[in-house]
Amino acid sequence: MIWDKFRRQRGDEKTAPPPAAPVPEQLDDVDPSEDDDGGGVPEGAEEVANEPWRERAAAVIPGGSSTGSKRVEALYGDAPLGDTVPTHYSRARGCSLWLVDGESELEVVDCTMALGSVAIGYADGHVLSAVGQAAALGNVAGVPHTLEVSLAERLCDFIPCAEQVRFLKTGAESVSAAVRIARTYTGRDRVVRAGYFGWHDWASGADVAGIPRSARADVVAVPFDDVDALDRAVSDARGALAAIVIEPVVERLPSERWLARARQLATEAGAVLVFDEMKTGFRLKPGGYGELSGVEPDLAVFGKALANGFPLAAVVGRADVMDAARRTWISSTLAGETTALAAAYAVLDWHEREDVCATLATIGAALRSAVDRAIAAAAIPGIRTDGLDQMWRIVFDDADVERLFVRHAVEHGALFKRGAYNFAALAHEDAIGDVESAASAALVAIREAGRA
Ligand SMILES: Cc1ncc(COP(=O)(O)O)c(C=O)c1O
Image 1 (tube, rainbow, N blue to C red):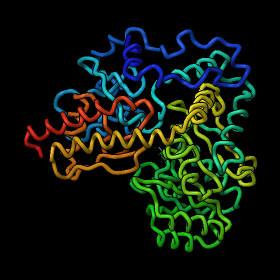
Image 2 (image 1 turned 60 degrees about the horizontal axis):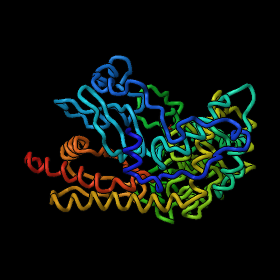
Image 3 (image 1 turned 90 degrees about the vertical axis):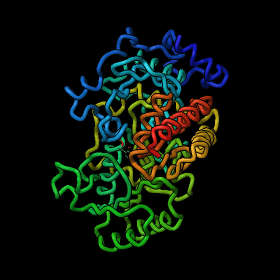
Image 4 (image 1 turned 45 degrees about the vertical axis):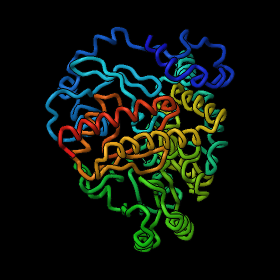
């Protein structure tokens, strides 16, 4: 019934997935799940709505969530929340979430799209069909599945800098793997980094507890898009530079000069240039900002939108550099499990069938404009949108106003990301009006409360 509603909202013809046969031939012999357009709603979903999930989570999960950005304080801010806010979901479909916590089910448009890990839409029929087939064939075994090879080949066709591929599960481990490969390739230790690379020791700042100083001893953090700082860090490294690791887009595009300089410095030093395309890959372009800018890294890291929310990440790059992976130790038991590989295979179908990244830019621009209109109509100063169309932010001068906005917006039907990106998905296409209404209603509520 909910699926029918979704189909009506989205329009069948627009949600029609790429044609069947998402994964290589042998998978076609297996019947896809009977309900090819989704299913999977846990039985008794209605009953979960009235549970106090926030309290139950806090009792058994330190911080209340295994993902930092999904903790209640990250979602809604630190100030006391008073009455309940929805913190958990029971179902997600397209760009809709059904939120639950203590009261009743609340359907909202999700503008966060699971921190950018979903760019097609939740529970996409084509992706689910591929995943279901892969699961039915046995998603792991004592030898690698052929899909690992087929997907690696296909990624090399999609991503300009990719000649070889290693699969892992998360962004943090794949950037760490890229650093390990670079150190092995160069026989050197020093890493210069600019960006966020997940929670591992080498990539964490001095403010993160529990990390021995030695883990950061050979890692120098430099600011985004700062040519002088990059020059200094590379010059300080002298002959020890193994890698320059860059997140190429942080809230805005970098200057051409910065990336060109990073490329030049790495080449001159005989070091490895690594781009972390976790957020930008299969979003700005399939090959991420490296493809968009034409600056080719030696290694790059992909994940998130690559598998539309299934756990897959990949280190890709030049064959001679990637070959160093054989001379060190990078391995994970489930790296090649096939449900995530099949999800990525189905995502590549989407990209082959249409220019997904261009559509994401169009839809993202429409979402931003909708929020811009709501901000202009409310005439509350100190609020604006920025970022790129595919990954955009709502910026508030006053943190209290931001907290209230996110809180009111969810009550009125849209989940926005506090202090970070909202990510466009194909599934947002018909949700622009709902997002504008929710933003408008939230801003009116703030004005009426005399908070702005
Ligand atoms: C650029 C970048 N690198 C690495 C990571 C870490 O990825 P994961 O959370 O999958 O470990 C993220 C996560 O947001 C990211 O945005």
